Length: 271
Image (tube, rainbow, N blue to C red; front, side, top):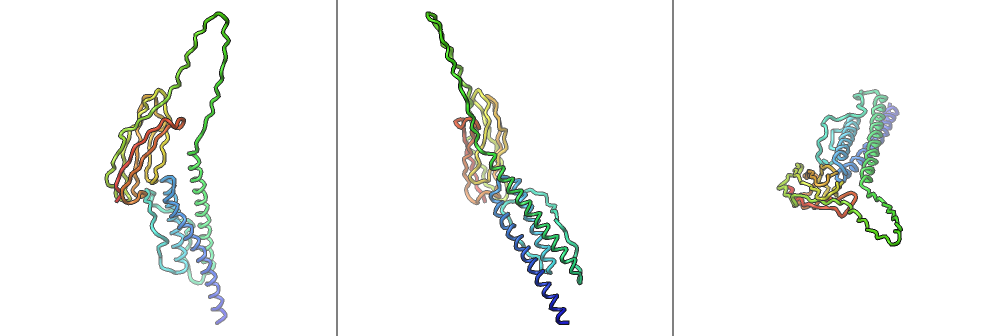
């Protein structure tokens, strides 16, 4: 009888070590996701990180359920609050445990390990996608070849030089030059609109530089026609901004000609 109890204790101890190793892997990946949320290049990508964190929390809770532990918090709450669908997808929901059936216990551990592999694959895909988004902003250069044609004028015949037409260039102006968003509570957002006017004779394809605080989001039409106007909507995300006074200068320029540029200021108080 003593030998039988000793065998059971050894099996439980080995299973406990396996579960603890899986739990530690979940916690390491969860901590990495929490750090990645603050540096996410887009709000959509931050929401995907948030969803993976909830999946990891569910898996850790199921490991605790297998070992009979009370439910515990898997980590600190992320700093970013995103509008993600509250319906959570439970990956590999195991069957309830039953006494005296070790096969079912092993099956549940296997399903949780498979779920962990799926979560890791999703994290790698998100990292690959984030690196692709950063490469989209690479500068492109265009080489223009000018061909000079020499004309030999006949002797004793006066030639009149042909004027070279000036190349049409664009110029942009932004109003207002500065906007105050007032007081923004932490976790909320505030929106203001600015007008971009193209005062030149050629259309301008614009690009907006990223804010230093990484808490500003822009919505605008990239191409402004000649002598035309477009609106740019600037949103301050209070969840990403630091508490205190916020002063940001937003730079807008032409994609093809850096000399065609303008800027405006954004001011707010984050509480």
